[in-house]
Length: 327
Length: 278
Image (cartoon, rainbow over all chains, first blue to last red; front, side, top):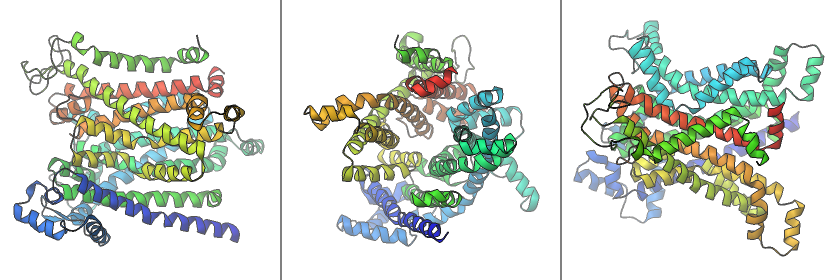
């Protein structure tokens, strides 16, 4: 027991040690983007809203007359102190603006992720019990579609069908104009606004979770220990849910964790289509208004978030599957 | 007929995929023959629903949407092919070198690949194109440079197993250099999975191009399906046809490519071929 504990601990420590170079890489890339961009970095950082004085002040502030390595180290220092610059469009520090919008994106991400994982895994279990039969073929074809439809188009079609035609759900935004400001009524109002964006968003990940789990389950159900479990007289369902699924989930969680990056890319388009006031929509606005400090600030914050989520996904996998610790 | 072509043509969804892809590519190439309008030609009544004069209706400026639909496919095809070519060349070369030589070369390439696979591709592409400027070249380069890691991993694994086979030893005994062995001996044997991965790369590139254009980060002078959807957003309830057709085109193109990928995979892989026949 203690041996496996030590090796698990050393895996966790090794994994944690990878975080620092990744953070440095993100900051470096961001620094390069600022400097590679056409034109003077100060003009770029200031965006279209600044006057000459601000630009001059920025040049001073960022030490743009200093050699590059000095600029770089002072930039790294700033980021490590959570100083991500100032948005001239919103007239506020970038960090504050992003943090104010972050909860809205997390609500969307959370519900879509839960929806796609639970439904995807359940459907995969039903499909894998009898592969290549009617249920499996139908579900797999639909999953193929969910995998291929661009999220933003799916979102637009959902609006067309369920908002403009059937009028079941609002076309966008997060609150109604005359919404109650607290308690359950407010939650219900947000919930009604959440349904369509969460669906548009979850479709791809549901398809992905379904395809991964199904493939893995079918592979696992051929193994010897499954035959043993069957011979003990266990039913199909308890074989799948008690024995096979546990082993199938490890790669699924690993891949879905990695795909969190795609998920955040998806947040930009889905939040744009549904006017959901989250970080993705903020990013789109910052592109439209050429608010570069804001755009690059979002880039740094979200990249840190992705590094964190990947770390958590890896650690969860290490906890579910002790074999990983030896790898 | 080669065995793999027969296996491919016996798979109905693979054939359907190929038909979809070739139909859309042909339509975009033959655009001038299929419509009398130019994609940016003004003149019709704005926001006309689909009908006799305009097959897919007109947009807010009275331009023919069928013409835009046809010409718009060119952007997807060009970006898809060129970006996939860039990433295939990078991916195959790096994978081949690292799988064949092993040792420290392999270590360096592996770390690089890991770095690039962690990068959130969409997110990074959006930021880079927004800052460096939205032009066709930038879009192609960004997509190409972000898409190679899966190919590298795949080719490396193939090369790592193939390099210890006896036919490689025979070539070495015959005095062939590493470049000859990599390209003439090992690469042909690793080709099937590379073909499948290339098709999937094209499909991912097409989706990424559409996403960037939808966000207004495509080349503003080039009509594309993504750009059409970007414009359609404001008129979604007023003129749904502006949104329906280009989105359908993107979806069918990507669906077709994925079906082709699956089809090639089954046809080129003898083990899967047997299973499909059961």
